[in-house]
Length: 355
Image (cartoon, rainbow, N blue to C red; front, top):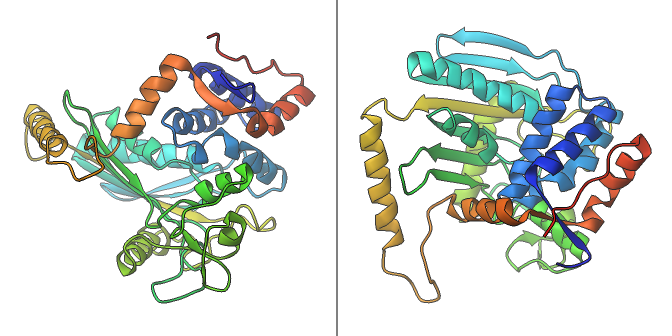
């Protein structure tokens, strides 16, 4: 193991992050929710949305831009639909409450949907799909985000990376979980490349002059590129409509950038939908059909350069299994701001996993 990296059990890093957030003024239950969501991202290998982001969230709490004790307002607008005003709280906490409400409605009526406004960055969209699938539901999640992509044909950023996620419980072959952004690469990956001092692949982004770049700093000053050209642009706009326009949240380029705007709350919007996977067929048939589909996908003839074919969510599930066995790897450089804060608060140090 590199001396620049430590491996930590999921339980230990959740403990550490929870205690640090409590010390920074966040209520314990909400602190635990934030910690669980961040660590879940790291556990699944989506470390661009994990603990490395925590210092920025803490800074925004102290700047008054994330409300650590929001008075969230929930309104039932129809038997299977509700709206939630998050009052600028932690996006993780707001999104969990929204998905819980959607699941509760779905358990009674088959389907439930919640529209969210005045939220903040909610981390990995897959967290809320997993939340639904743990209660036997299929789910869809949309969220808008701060400016990153131009509309197709434009050169100035307007729409966010706007994640969309979908999941259905599977049988013995595992669940299907798609979590994607309409852009070629998330900004988190570009920020990670900048921290590590490495180039990004050509095709991720354009610089501020509209030219392709491999420099992560120039990429962050420019715009990200959508997947599939106009199709990715259309997906980003669709998510902005569902999560922003229809909810009362910011939209069309008005979501504030958490790394650049230190005066205004983000006003992120989310859309959560949960539904019983067995609305149309018994669950045992759903599991059998999902297993058959998965087997067919995996056994499809492989293109040159491919050793195997995987279903959406499978790479992350494999990484989770590996990290549970060996611990989650963390760069000490990335952890340093958190370790320094913890020491100032007199908290118990983060314990590395014994290997």
